[in-house]
Amino acid sequence: MQLIHYVQFVAKLKLTDWRNRRRLAAQNQTKPIDGSTPTVRNAEDIGIDNMIYIEPRDENWQEAWRVTEGLIKQIRDDVAQKKSRF
Image: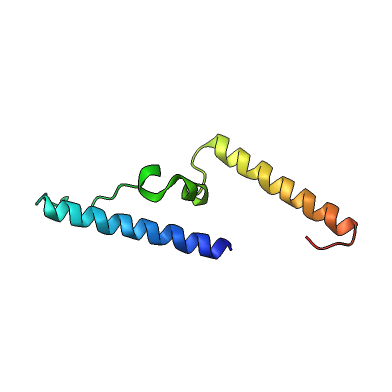
């Protein structure tokens, strides 16, 4: 399931890049000196639902990620103690 969501996320990013390149070409804007195409990656472009798949960027989100991982491990251990499947 995670793979499907990741593929969807990457596809949206590539589609956004393609749309941005088309928009820039239509507007006849010049490219940056390094020849790269500027891309915009914000919640509106890739969809807020897919923002959860981006790596945490600040300490608050990193701490939230660590807490979430800890909770999942605790649930796994509790289930294993009861000899069930997680």
